[in-house]
Image (tube, rainbow, N blue to C red; front, top):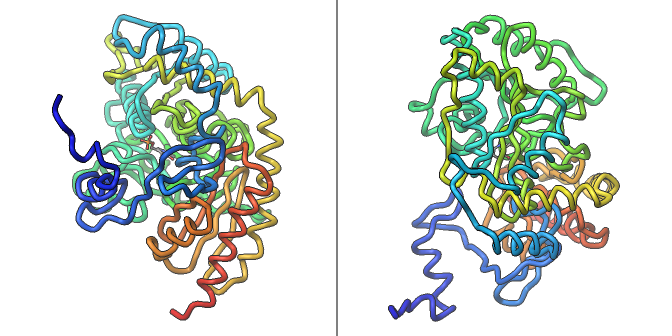
Length: 437
Ligand SMILES: *Cc1c(COP(=O)(O)O)cnc(C)c1O
């Protein structure tokens, strides 16, 4: 057998990773340190040097039940015995059907049709294609643009990038090759001061471009990676009304917010608004495998086929992977059987109480929270390697970006573990405030 030198000696692993492997949004030449994880269990990550960290990130919104869950493990193992994967062209299987039923039953009635794909970004691509194909099939071939709000994040593929915030969306350098969509102002928080004027620009953009706009796309209630902005549910009602009045479809990207994170099963329930198309991902498999779904209303599904030829032009190789569908189905059952609402509500209360003392520190610009999400926004960007090291030394895994130090822990986190997360954030903010420059 061929001798793989590096693989055989753990002391080479980290240096090899550093030299050869890209991490997200990272330089290959001067990467930030990456900590070596040896295992994960419940709410803890175990580093290879033996340190245990309380996980504040749920591996980017995904691991809502914590890690290494016996039921999710068993579901995958059981599925593995029958098949890991089969192509989805011309074939189907029980895991995908059982998962589709769950998604259709749990979301609002009009959403009756599901497209399964590999990742959140791809589900956004599919949503955009659905919207454009829908109007194309109605003979409205000019309706190819999208309208969104600033501050959004919808993924890293080209179609998804084109609707991310044009400044904060991390993709400015691609502006020249992206389709040019329309951007209304970033939505505001409503502290009982809703102002109709907040919709003016959105409304006039929509009305003046209604013949070109296929759909409005937005993350309901919480804008995630574009800035962790929490905004008024009233926007969602206005989006729906204005879309209906102007013959435009409404897409909600619930990839980050879905499956209870904001306190409702889906964030659009905060406003009782139903989109025409909905994207799900991230927590869909409980953090086990990559899988996403685009749900569409019957109106959209039928509309796409209205010109007779209308087949949806998409079909990833690993579409509806049985292992991923099986674990997603188990994750949903586990969530519904758990007291998730009480858990998220308790996390919300605790985060609010325990992060609030940060608000008046000199380095802090804002503190905000909803559901199992807590955000401390700093006035200037945090110094990443330094703050990362402090968090790890303190026994927590919190991964800030830019001005944002935020947590969205697994729902199973215990009060003392959550206090540790918030306590470390407050302490580090205090230390930074005391530090000159
Ligand atoms: C993470 C995210 C995406 C992209 O999902 P990937 O699985 O990373 O491709 C899209 N939209 C939102 C709101 C997200 O949070």
